[in-house]
Length: 326
Image (cartoon, rainbow, N blue to C red; front, side, top):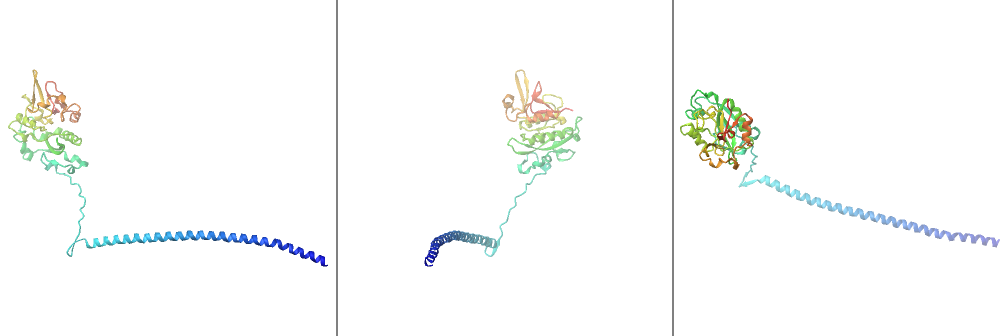
């Protein structure tokens, strides 16, 4: 009995040897888990605390910005409230609106030679500045020409003539009002040609009725007009150096920039020319500005409408001259 009991007691003691390490191992894992949980919670707390600090900084920045905006709004309000004060009186600062362009539409009222600014010309409707008018006895145009460029005759009647107003660019590149008288059959053709010249900024020195240069007869008046470099059409007179009636007398011819485009004739080896002050432009090879040539826009337009150019004549060359016979 005693021996067997001792064996049983030894078995119990040997079982306790494994329980202690197991407990220690369990305690180790529990401790490690707690430490891990502690570190995780610490990191999350630190992150939350950092976010809280950043939110606080943003809040402070927003409050500072709002303060500045409130200050600006307060100043603006005070300025609008007080305005420009003199004593107790408040003056409002007027707002000047951008003015709309004021176009000239009264071409019939503007005398030849009037200069217009670019702002006065309606580029969307330039046709309105090119107009044809009948001439009646007693009206203003009739009073200007009667007994001068026009006299009663058997070749052309007053009602067969038309007065035209146009715009053109002068030699200073300014927009200038021009005028001329032509045959009624060609009035719209002349009007359209000068409209196209204007739109291409073709330069014409001046365009006045020859009556503004009247000297007492058609021949010397023509010379005076040419010397002034004046572009003109109708004048009841004969051909230069001839007794035949000119196409100018019928309103079917025009002389353009006559100083740069003179009438040139030949007598033996000598040349003669009109106007008398045009010698510098008799040599056409120089290619001076405003000389009319076969490639010139003025030449192309008139010839396209069936006009003959005097620069292509054989015996004499009338470089200023375009005509269209009936």
